[in-house]
Image (cartoon, rainbow, N blue to C red; front, side):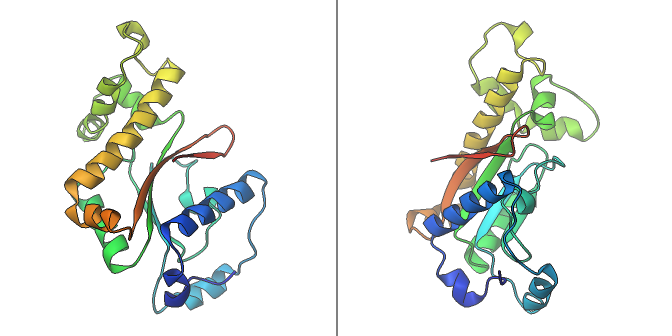
Amino acid sequence: MKAYTKETQATMTPEKSLQALKEGNKRFQKNLKAERDLLDQVKDTSKGQFPFATILSCIDSRVSAELVFDQGVGDIFSVRIAGNFVNEDILGSMEFACKLAGTRLIVVLGHTSCGAVKGACDDAKMGNLTALLSKIKPAVNAVAEPKDESQRNSKNVEFVNNVAEKNVYLTINNIRKESPVIEEMEKNGEVEIIGAMYDVGSGAVTFYE
């Protein structure tokens, strides 16, 4: 499998880009890999890159987008931050990736058993982490159940995963609200924004379509 070129990138619609990620995750779950020479891809991309998708995911060591979607050098832009939320810098990176570098799909990828989400659920405070976790608190507050405060913490696995899912949706809303560039591209059909959840127990990605 060769690295994407300007010509092959141009054939990638948002729908084809999503399908490529779905197929890659299926290979990952089956412990299969597409045939590619990574060093050849390094050479192929040495003078330019033409990725087809931008993935916003958590820094969690178990959730490497290149691995879970079986992608090679130059295939995707990977943006990683604990809790997979957006700020001005991340939005600027996404705008570069989509408007200038030509990616056709943005995936906001949350995951089960997220440590950042657990920290937000527990209202943890520690140095700069306090400010980071505050970005996830809106998702905690947006999940209505359970109402019993004793159950709204990191020990409740279902609650944690529901907050992680809500955080994905709120992040997508923030991308549209805070980036007129991406919002316009989405309205024009140039890019699609989709949420997804990675299961750390199975390796499967569920897309929110």
